[in-house]
View (tube, each protein chain N blue to C red):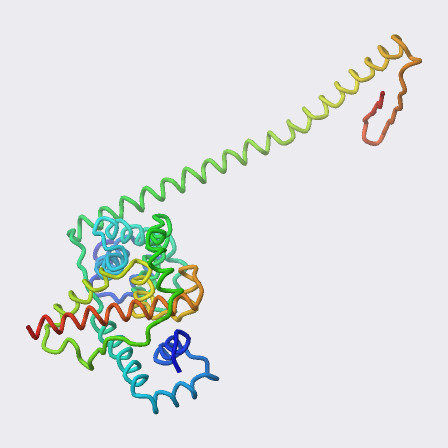
Length: 150
Length: 202
């Protein structure tokens, strides 16, 4: 048994991550192949050495200075969150007023356009009704009138 | 009066301090920072290999820990929970910097080529006779000689104790790539530790 797949299987076995269906095969090879046994042993030893000697680093700043930096960043983050929250509240307040206002504006525009279209129809009718074809739809329920002219 | 009722933070357990911090007690949180700041900083330092970045990311981790402390339910120790935060920040930073792109050619050559079965033999106690701090320092140096991608999987597997699939998910690579990177990283580390032994015998 050689190759990449085998080597990675052996590593997975050592790490306890090999799927159960492959374990027996790897164990058989380890028991019969000195090279495989050596590799498994090397992987185990390396893992133990590295895990038991995790590098340590000490913060180069004093307790007070380090905490003052952390505290300042916390305060900045909280101030940013507060500004965002205030902005969102203001936007929500504006939207509460703006939405109905936009609705009213839309109605005004529709009515205005409706009148303009009416005038256009009159204009078209007066300038040459024989060349124009028109169709009108009126919805009393919605309070709108649509003129289709071509 | 209030001061006399205050808890002796230095004598409190992490659980007590967390509980107080959840209630908005910044002094309790400061004690937690003091207790675990070296571990958080060390993890960032091992990952990033840069003191300025490590300080910045460790401080950012504490900000996130304060903001999310209500999410900490005690499934792990507070230190483990905080360490996960800094690890995630390091991974985000690495992704932002796209350092892995510079290493991609080297990785592709390794990951698509045949994995050599041979690995330098690591003796049962390759660091025998060395002071613990010296061994830590030498392992740290060896980790610093790995590519960032290889170092990341070693840190996540050996120090964070994450399984292959969890490493794959965190780093955004396949499980096969995790296994390949871990093997190459270990082989390199074994070589570096073998050199350490040679140095000692000279």
